[in-house]
Length: 618
Image 1 (tube, rainbow, N blue to C red):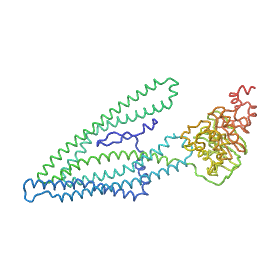
Image 2 (cartoon, rainbow, N blue to C red):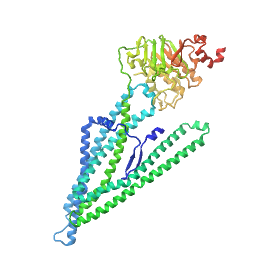
Image 3 (cartoon, rainbow, N blue to C red):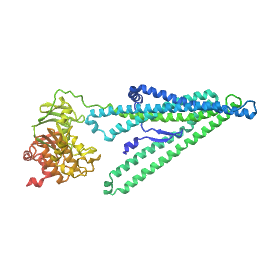
Image 4 (tube, rainbow, N blue to C red):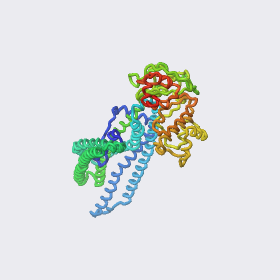
């Protein structure tokens, strides 16, 4: 878990009712607006929600009526036994009537359980369908977001919104919402039942609540501070552990084991202190609540006994009232907890809605169509900047079909930016980029990108078979086409030496094959796609010399008859390029063939000679 994730997570502390009380770590900026928007996702299922409300109310009413009816049975039993004990003629326990009361009671509890099951069943459907709609909207939104959104945020941040935050919404809808309804109905129902038995006893029971809150209020504030410290230090500890274990080779190489242990011990000690104080202080809450509750219980019993002797109420009513008074605090505690959970849920929903409100890619105005490009590429007075300052100014390039164009220059010169503009991952500030004379802004992004194939330095393969990964390059590819592409990329031999050949399953990181083998698979995938224009971004930088030769041979096959753009740091690999563009600070400062640029003895010659001084001298 990263530091940020750990620090933003919520702490569960012990609540006054014995349940868990959510110690909030994050609150929504616009609670009402976000809640209203979230409710909008529930509107299509309003009739199901109405059924949930009705079922929750009926379930709770049947449950609340139980103690009162049980009290009637106890009164009947007591009066019959008391009359018989006093020798009153004809006095006896009416077991028939008691049996009927108990049957009614059993029926109430059965109906209560049925309605409770019904509300949970319907609500699970509502919650899952709502979350399904949210996921669909988020997934469609991600497809419409520009590349700059992903460049400006970590993958973990986006994934957290798509998975954790939506899961939080789903679990709250499925569990907490019905609990909230049940708790409110229970509170109202119990108060009504207690008032029907005795207003005096009800007053005693209700007064105990503010007394309890007054007593535990200062303790709650202090415990929340320590829980916040505990959560903060837990985030620090998790972040430290993650850094030390992911970078353990560097820690060992520089001899920082002792320092790392000292940092761990310091944070661990701080976490221990904060956790001990938080648990100790919050642990005082329950004894105080029990103490005040027991005092209330004693007073209710004494006053109730007096009322029974005065025949103001029956013995069964006392039993029912004591049951209600015990049940009274639980829904109040649940309501407080659920209020906190709803606050966290709305904060999660707000993060999801922030993603849904992100600026999308510009709407496509498709006036041109491109079926199969010839490969002519033109940059006309292109201006571009990621912010206000322009990185590329007045770029002009003309590439003929079938030419190999190499792009060289120092880090930050704008090489990758140029490729991003070519693929229309970013929109231009000015100028035009044309493919076969057609402005790329006048064609659909799908048509444009179908004309390109990419082999990047960072290989991307998904969890699946090798055959599935290769077929990703072309819809409906046959096995023969896949095998032919693999042979052209010099990948067929190593694939067939694997235990399951083309059916070998790559894991999520594709770490069960080597880096060079990954690169060969991405080249085979590009060959299968058969695009008219290829982009190669330093595809051989992380492999050994022997594998580089195989990859270079595969790329030579791949580039035959295609326009290609090659980003290279090893200048020896692009000597045969038809055109070399030398970039620096967003500008093409030199262009020409390898020999022409060496003869100019300019920026390119300095770059080349710094890498191959001996060969250049020879």
